[in-house]
Length: 372
Length: 208
Image 1 (tube, rainbow over the protein chains, first blue to last red):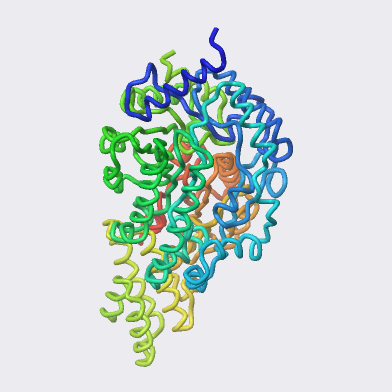
Image 2: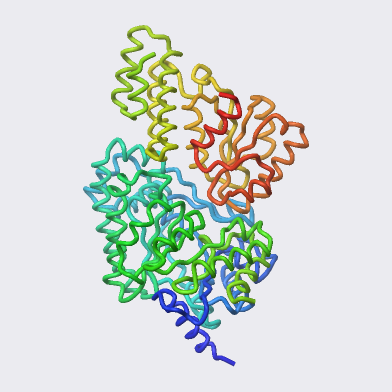
């Protein structure tokens, strides 16, 4: 019988080998997302994360214990924090939404055209605080991290030997932030009508994001640091605009993680379809980054273009987890193992486990990966 | 027909579009002719989108220019004068408040000649039924960004069947997690990957 520490070490090494593009003893499995709570207790609802967060942490931990071949994940989920990250109001289950609904963002675009100049004059932090506290109406207490919950979650993960792959760095490029702050439609118009103003503001935002990233990486080291992007993908803007407004900033933030992250990988969480943008990611040195698609980018194309260069995670689609038969899920997971794995691959879901999984499908993901 | 207006609309040259519309108005060119030229320009935008020369940002910008130009001649994109292809009803299904995709589709449909009835977000089945009875659309769109709302779309479409409203309309669905399997599950007719696909599908169905 392995001790929890031995189990943790085994899981950690397995994940690290995959991230380093080495061949692990088997394909590691990292699953997380709000729907995992249903495996721990089929009667749990999303509002449990809000009403009784410590119980929710225990229940997610129970799910991990009942699926012991999962190597990594997180016992904690969401909250008002998402609203702050996207500069909008967040509607919560059991408060503004039905008990079993997932958190939803009200992306109305609180930032104005005039704010581009204010960002240059007074800084992005100034505008952010103005939006969050004056325009949206958050209080600092609402957005402060809940230390009791975080400590409880960290202890619980340790107790069950679960590897949390995420370090403290969490960043998105200025383009992505502005799509939420302004709203997509208004921001797309800004790109056409006032490109120079947008770029001047982005330069200021980037500098502040770099400083915050460095501090967060130093405060909480880890196997990876999160770097997200979605709305600069191939359906949203042309390559010319991508190269002007997104990629230089996105790349610079990734380079900082590579250069100053003390060996941590850049965890590219990439939503939407990036099929036509994949070659850009060849710019990074081998085994310094991870590509984590949400199932909308073709993972087989990712393998073809980036498979020799970086670890890939994914990508059982949320709709398949909710609606697919166990047989469909099994076949898809085996295909992933055979065509994306076994080296440089981590089995995971596309984005995260949705709030309404068929619980048996979660077990099938694990069993199919193990080859049972 | 003003070839210049058609071309500058297709090229998304906002200043030139506005100048040309003003000039045509001063020459007493009928508003419907000007709208027709703008819509022909939107046709170029749609073609370039299909050829991947234009992207979502250009679709949004084209709708913005179209709306600005329409206002100059006393209309808006969704007004009766601008709408020649029939009515399109759209909303985000109940329990889901995502509005970005829905807004983009309704804007692009309006500026491509459809009379758009936007039901908003978190739309209950009863509201779809009421709108279908009142506006008699040939196509309706249901947006959904949450796997938890799939059953709501399914219930909505099943209720349309029960009410005898499903036979003559096509139901289109769209949104991040929606795929072909979802389409089959909820009983919709087609999954639209983007706004332009909604335009093309609707035009084809309406025989335009």
